[in-house]
Structure formats: structure tokens, C-alpha cells
Amino acid sequence: MAIVVNVDVMMARRKMSLTELAEKVDITMANLSILKTGKAKAIRFSTLEAICAALDCQPGDILEYVPDQVETSGTA
Image 1 (cartoon, one colour):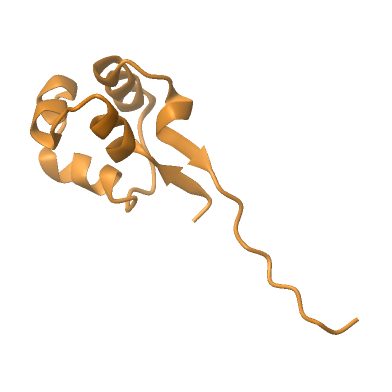
Image 2 (spheres, helix red, strand yellow):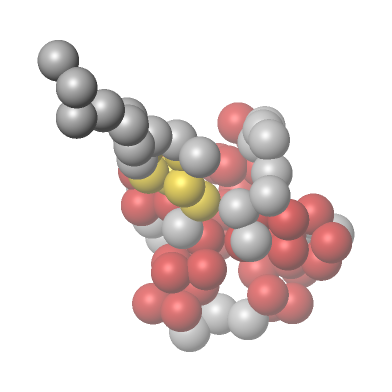
């Protein structure tokens, strides 16, 4: 996975529960859980904006790019 969602990290830093964030963002617990566990394939900018507002953070605090490991063989 190249994009890691760190919403759980920001929730912990803000001492906010999944239920509280879901209510503030007006998103279902199921969809928020999908984001939190990193199983989401996409996120709407409006949802990202609402999460950032609720957690008082920047999108870069929630989304992180992690390059995939490139396997190299030992032969040249």
C-alpha cells in the first residue's frame, strides 16, 4: 500500500473516540472504521476536509505516502 491513512493516530493525539469523530464529521461508523483500518480505496475531499476540521489538523497529518518495497535480485 502506497498511501497510509493515519486517522487513528490523530484521533489518539486529540483523545477523540471513533463515535465522537463520526458524529462531528457526519460519517457512518462503518465508513470511518474502513478509513481507520486503511481499507479505504478513496476519500472525498469534503470528507477529508471535515475530518481535518474535527481533528484540527492538516491532510498531511492524516495521509502519508509510503513507497512500495522494490525487490532487487542479487544477480547482475
